[in-house]
Amino acid sequence: MTTAQTPDVQPTPLALLLLGRGADPASERGVDCPGDLPSPSDPGLVERARAAKERLGEKVFVLGHHYQRDEVIEFADVTGDSFKLARDAAARPQAEYIVFCGVHFMAESADILTSDAQQVILPDLAAGCSMADMATAEQVEECWDALTAAGVAEDTVPVSYMNSSADIKAFTGRHGGTICTSSNARRALEWAFDSSGGGGRRVLFLPDQHLGRNTAIRDLGMAPEDCVVYNPHRPNGGLTPEQLRDARMILWRGHCSVHGRFSLDSVREVRERIPGVNVLVHPECRHEVVAAADRVGSTEYIIRALEEAPAGSKWAIGTELNLVRRLAKRYAPEGKEVVFLDRTVCFCSTMNRIDLPHLVRSLESLAEGRVVNRITVDEETAHWARVALERMLALP
Ligand code: SF4
Picture (tube, rainbow, N blue to C red):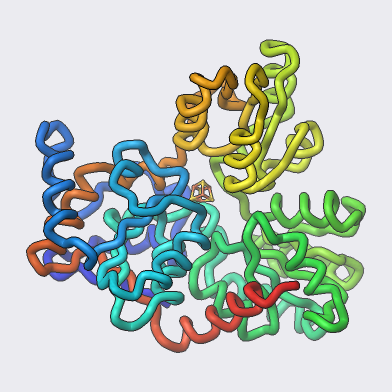
């Protein structure tokens, strides 16, 4: 369980709902961040951010997730995916303040992995992740009860994607499971099924059904029938005890609202529009999209693939638009054509909540000695989440 501390403003109950505590994911959009913010039209914002960061010096370390806006990335000391950023923060013990430009579960992970002397700040409390919100602690406990009643819990190993709340990570640690990222999901599943690892007969994969299914089918050679989907909104997940028993992968019914948008039509359309294009997608995309793509990989993989791509090559990328636009701009001078896989413009709306006014407010408050929007994870939750994260770090 986490708390967000805001000494100068009181977040509204609605804002707290966005932080993965029983929220309706549909409610993520259109909610104002509480508190006073500099005006977005203030022409001095860049200078104000620069001045506040300079005043803070080594005391502050700004992390920028790949899906953040350019105006925010400009102030990031490091960029990366959520796990890399949390580790970067832990490797900077002299930084008292970690400003995490990303979403809530990422700030939680940073708090779990950094020392007690470091404080993690999320510039906008409304920057939650709709996927993480799709698996609440209560729902996952109910699921485990259903698995226990069906007699399958004891040989089921939970594997949770990094994109989950601290509560879910702690659940995973308590029940002998591991965390995974989109880069090491294959190794995590192999470990879970291995008798010298998790030793499971089946895996409960949380909360992204697509990453779980894609990894099971593409990397472990399972059949689609080996996977069942647990729907937390139906009694016993909508599954019979036999279905639970026979399954090798019990996939939580969660998904990323950004990657879930790409469809087979997007792939067909881009192939027609750009002959010779390479379709490269993130494994959070639906299975049919992944199956139709030329290459599949994490954000770090996508960045590397474009870096290594020959001049004159053409790429349609199925991941968040801020990153795709940045890569398109970076590689255009080298003659690499990079386009967004979908014709419709679509950012991650919650990632996009972190903008220059929010960053300026965080930095200026810190420079004045006030910590706004601190994210903390309680010790018990942090302990078990760390157990699951350490299992991931020990993966062969
Ligand atoms: S891109 Fe998807 S998984 Fe990432 S923060 Fe946004 S909703 Fe969550």
